[in-house]
Image (cartoon, rainbow, N blue to C red; front, side, top):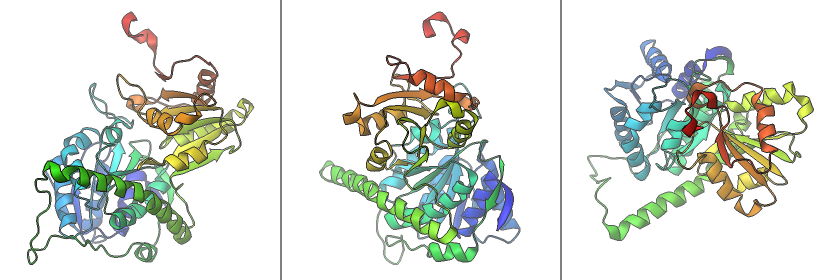
Length: 390
């Protein structure tokens, strides 16, 4: 069924189709509309779930952890400072191998205070042990949410579905919502083999001595590596059900034979695709969209970049004192190609700054300078800064 929906409303509908048994709800801009819409579905009798209105994001993550550990399909959502507040619990959820889904409506982290979009929040918890999938548009956010539950429950690893705040969450799009029958056929009822049961008492999250800690971390790491196959399989199987692919691990758009590539995550993909039509005289460009950031898809990325001579990485976050987060990992994956592959890394759109179509020619112009900086914030206005910070 096709309907005109706000991104947050569409995500809430997708969550409802997955039949969550517990939803932990706490409002924070720009995620608020997701849990508001879930609450309305419950009030209207269209969703049967235990909706728990908690007092903080820490509590939201804790309720979702406990619910999933006890055998219930669970969901929560957050943004920005909320992700930071629940970060302790995010590490515990992943370390305990608890399968659940969280939507991160990406928003900048203070200071300075900003309610607008970049991806610093999810990037800040990239090492928590969660699968991270980044959506380019709201249709993909719907489809990825449904896929995320199957991935999480088969791998026993939590999945964070990342959607750009406001740019997607508050934007109206024509959305194809699947039927309940389609989702039920794709996503079987939740069954957690290690579910807590007072009739068979067990302990989880107990103290682990140094003699065993490394082995636990090794097992978590290997489970995330194995999840690569399940992420690809879920997207492939959902495409058979719905007729839509969400891009797998890494999606190649534009000209696949181009020698110049631009890599990005999230909604900036749509901007760059439109810019390719707006500036046809710039020549062929291979647009590479990194959909899966954790686990990092080394082999898929290397295939997507094969034959490139120049690569620009556009990201909406940074690691102060280092530079690009995504760029650093891409360089590591392509390390043996440097020398033949000219790589440059640019942060754009921080704190919700607009990414206009003219970003494309600006990136290509910067990339063409052989000895240019390995990383810089491309859209910074240096005239606003004191001399020592330029």
